[in-house]
Length: 246
Ligand code: PGA
Image 1 (cartoon, rainbow, N blue to C red):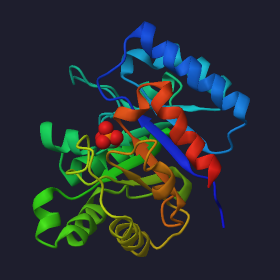
Image 2 (cartoon, protein in one colour):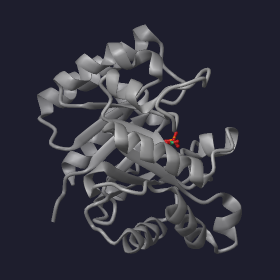
Image 3 (cartoon, helix red, strand yellow):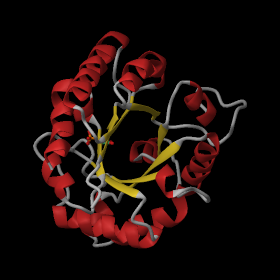
Image 4 (cartoon, rainbow, N blue to C red):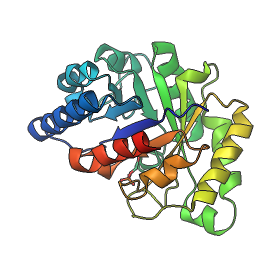
């Protein structure tokens, strides 16, 4: 069994130059000293990519973007292309996060177009899926996520280029998580749809140092996508340590 986990920090719209760099320096130092063998990725705001990249890559940590456009370049004020992320040293990009699906009306088709462009540019893509409270309560969570999987994944990719993050919308930022059985059930459904055990399936939504170990101990869970708890070394490092203890 491959016990290597992937732990991804999603900083969202948080992090100043001074505090952000301070935090990643501490994380990088811990990762180096502890000889962590798990894959760690940090996705800071675009403004911090350039400064953070050398610090992280020196410790074997990858850096990623939180979104990209589906076009290579052009008149898209405020947007960032996948090639620009590569140019900043990114190896990964998060796509279809529920905050973007909701606040920017990103539908599955748009997520797929972005994923295609990101793969074409050489990035590994982290495609987020997850049901809202309504679909969970009405017993339709599996069907809902299944349809997202059908429509949001890139058309052509190698297994190692795709990570699927199951992030129930009702769990993100609310301190609530599905039961371990519900997470496992969802991950197994995703694996049966993509027909490959080599595509990593990670869980996200209120992951903290208190639940990370239990969640990652499940062999169906290849890692975690961490929001709030990834912002500070003191809350992110114990999650990485938890993976080391499994
Ligand atoms: P959270 O966010 O860990 O703060 O719940 C997770 C995410 O949105 O990726």
